[in-house]
Image 1 (cartoon, rainbow, N blue to C red):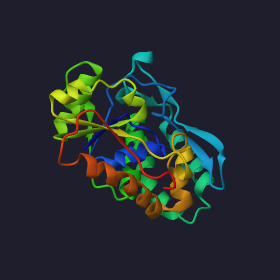
Image 2 (image 1 turned 30 degrees about the vertical axis):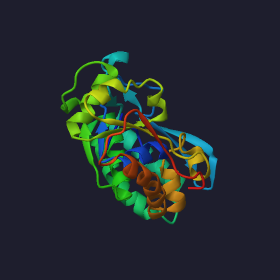
Image 3 (image 1 turned 30 degrees about the horizontal axis):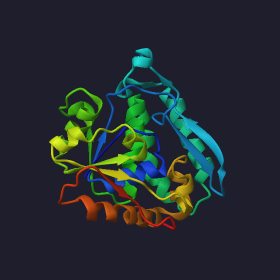
Image 4 (image 1 turned 135 degrees about the vertical axis):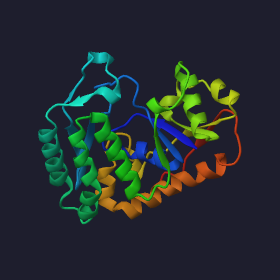
Length: 252
């Protein structure tokens, strides 16, 4: 199963859960950078109050203006950005009993600031969180894979390049997705619909770091595995036409 998503900085819980459920994550790095999205920023909640939010933002320059691709966006003053990021993460989550494990996992993210590339920092932040949760999948980059133009045709081609037999699509993507290019290539389309209560009630807004700092990596991994099992049962090993809605009881 394949998921395609732009590199997000310290991704939201629902985004991380979707990628965790897939065998392949294709990091979509050759589309337009959008400042209102999560490519360079993340909402961090207080450890003891998830309603107390603050943006963590990497100051980013776009060499080609609004036409700049995600992979070409550059960090303004990487050293300052790294220090601010490290300080804010420690301030928000340093009191958590799980902070030592999180801090250790986040070292590669801070090192990635040396590249000067916002996308590298964002992709690294997603990789390390997936690794922390025990994900065994593979990360690929869209700019290095063959694909024809056209929004849905391209997504289908990218999925086919992995050899996956199913494409995992979030609820936002399902609003515009044309399944025809996938059907032609014998690729199922599965709709990822996580619960909306419990830890998931804020999962579309907050960085997954809050859940990890509050409950710990092992507990969060168990919740994500519970979401991934129905997907595996439904899609792996057979092709399903159209959309396959997937979810678990909201108490999870």
